[in-house]
Length: 318
Length: 282
Image 1 (cartoon, rainbow over the protein chains, first blue to last red):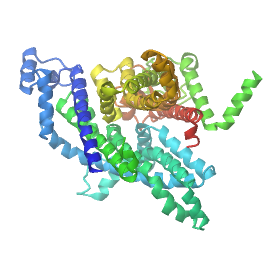
Image 2: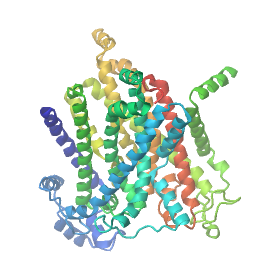
Image 3: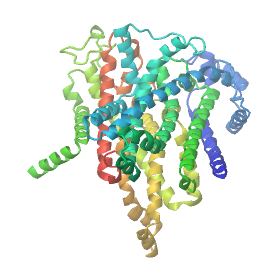
Image 4: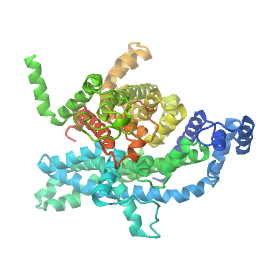
């Protein structure tokens, strides 16, 4: 098992190197000179070529690309990915402020998605092809079809119009005031959690359906065990593997989705920071966040594969 | 003719949700094709006197902050958004499938390198990759299509590659090779046809996600640039600032997106059930 883990772990490193190359190249191909943008704002113009050249030199942007890339890689390995070109703050410092927001949102969304998906998926499977099943299935398909930015917009509209809710202005950390913090996070988490639950509930349903057809479930039934004892004790345990896997994949997606959700609900997280950094060609910030996201995705994949290998030794060979 | 109607009726009874999906998709496609005739106003026509008017007889979906008719923009937006979705899926899924086919069939070092690049693309959160690509190439119809199709390549590659890997080991491929068929002939005449069903399944399943991806880019202001009406772009910018004065500006384009995604998802499920009996009823 430990050899398997080591082999899989070393296999992830080249993937991350390729990710860093792709994002480096994409950002350098992007039109727009960041030195010019820094000198004259988003509009461009106003700065003389000499000034632009001077600033590029100061920022090290006039060096050959391979030197810049090597510097970026070394910085990442030493956990010193540089400073933001716009805020002049160390990138890690900026991230430390914003990461808790993104992580809290993702965590709450996953929690809510489980709270919705598990009961609805199990009930759908147990009462297959009855109105219970159809109701939950229609609800999950609806969740799949409503993109978060539209669902979020509608929710804000409803909350403000009907309940006089006001979108929070500044971010409150859970350590300062948990209640105020939850008031900020609960609505975005609900919207994203519901959308996430849609697919999760489908997978739960099909996994439970599959296990329900197993012989040992028939045996348990023949023994005269009550329906919900069977589901709780035999079915759920065996149906959980694909559900956990999908949930891990979804957590990676939620990081990407933070780009949208933090924009609608004006939360100062990493996603919104990334969009702004892309638009402003803040190379160190974009590169660091993308590599960070990719690392999380790759690690989550690795973790689920390891869980699988642990559950089922047959998968270790492939 | 009567036979065909009966056949469609049978299919509709067997796959009611899939049938609903097909109907929705057909309606949206018709809306896109006949946008000029069903909309009474030009989508880009600015009328200062008609700004932010609520839905009425004259303007079914109201007007936006430039006094443009929202219904007309949603109808014309179907052209842009559906075209991006469909073309992106065709390009992305086909490229992914071809890469997977060749990489899986050839195997060896080529396969190893190609698959690491695919792994890297998969490690990008979908939207972030699309965002970066549009930022790099500039926001335009063509570049949005490129960005969205790029995000679809790795999954299609992985699925088709796994099929190609298993087909490679079958006896009819060995037989074809033994009879002296060239490598190209084996790949395209023997392996490729066996990859068609999974290709169709993943292509139809991707249509919904491609529409969402396009709309998300538009929402973030990196979609098809204004004044071109596209569903996602209609939800961004001014729509958010006028949300409480003119909610119809946000409601109808979003409704169109959700309907399209719903229709394509239902269609995708039905196609999967029909082509992949193993997954039936899930």
